[in-house]
Image 1 (cartoon, rainbow, N blue to C red):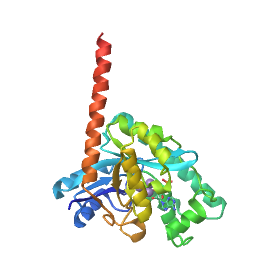
Image 2: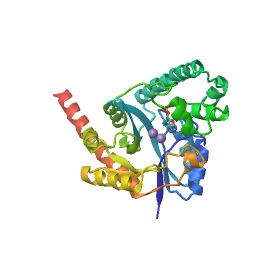
Image 3: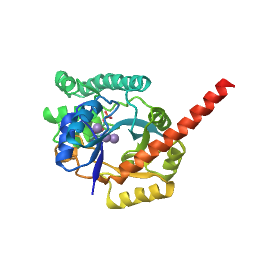
Image 4: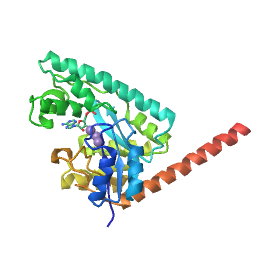
Length: 291
Ligand code: AMP
Ligand code: MN
Ligand code: MN
Ligand code: MN
């Protein structure tokens, strides 16, 4: 049976594998398809596609966007985005710059509470792309302030902690529109961490949401079942992925969870339906322009 892992990070955001390493590792694990879903950046897509074309594995262009609803952070993954679109890239650059400003703010807050991490090391880890709190967590482990990434979030980086700084806020509607505008389909990521209430999912469905990441490493069997039921009831596609950030257990190895290739086929169908609908709207508008 063909399998896919539809949520993977690379060194362009807070993953530890380069796009080429991701593709090779996915092939080694016997996966047929993967998606590169870095935070606010798409620079890993081309190198992954190039490598995949030699190996014969399907790479779906993706991105993971963070948004906020009622003070809760919610993540949305976009698949089949036309990532090269200029407007889309400009939006992502705004998010990346905001992440960089936030990183200086976090550094200052850490210093204020007596935690001094190596600024040069931090920025050398992220010279290629999007900086995230995960990079801080790695520095804090390396400097001996904490033993695990989880402890770094619990003690310093998480909401309510001394060095917590919010990200640039966009609404779920803005995130979905951004993905749809460049031909992508949207999926709510790890609903257990935010956005998994049925009424909220209903609202997103009205905004054009395609799927729900019901299969996720941190979902219990009961939670997976619940999200699969929501998907049936709301006519959403079930997707899944590891959210792999690297090779270690705590970073969720690639392919340690996978979904049937049917999820990929369903996403493609949804993309084609959305494209056809957009074409009808465009044709209608151009007819109106002529009259
Ligand atoms: P950021 O996007 O800068 O807010 O950083 C959040 C990233 O940190 C997530 O994408 C995860 O990769 C990672 N992370 C690891 N553990 C946690 C945690 N306990 N809470 C939030 N983020 C975490
Ligand atoms: Mn991450
Ligand atoms: Mn996420
Ligand atoms: Mn992710």
